[in-house]
Image 1 (tube, rainbow, N blue to C red):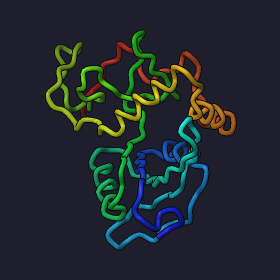
Image 2 (cartoon, rainbow, N blue to C red):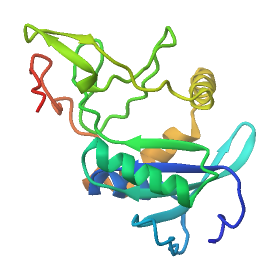
Image 3 (cartoon, one colour):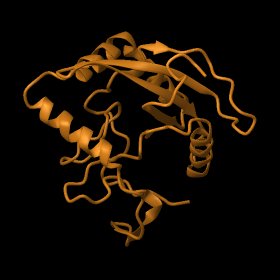
Image 4 (cartoon, rainbow, N blue to C red):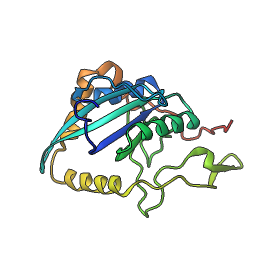
Length: 205
């Protein structure tokens, strides 16, 4: 196995559907490990590396494996299943994507923004579009649900929120540095940058 991945430990999975998403995830890594020869059953191509962090508790290293798939839930499921077979000790899985976010005065979701879905009552913080139905093209009613966010991630978000009340977060500086280094590709767009207008009606096909 690779440097940093030669024994079971904390390993985070990052799954992307678009090239630009994979490039942005790769840019967050401080060190890239040599490529991995995958088993015959796994057709994924992985980027392996680590991100180094420093917080009030001290320095830390997070190993990550990035896989790029193709758009669509079926493709994402195939990539994720192969990753789990190859890296059976994966502890966290993250899907990186635009998530069809819609700007509104209450939720300022614009191009280049990062959204963390946390529901205040403990329900699912992210709603899959085809798990809803439209009422007279104006409203949505939930007809199903995806799995809840793992407790370890919810607890991590709470810890970050508490830290942010008192300190400048190292990760915030990291993102700022990333923006300067890759400004043309990954900088947040202007205030006018929107994925969709709030009044736009999506079509399910």
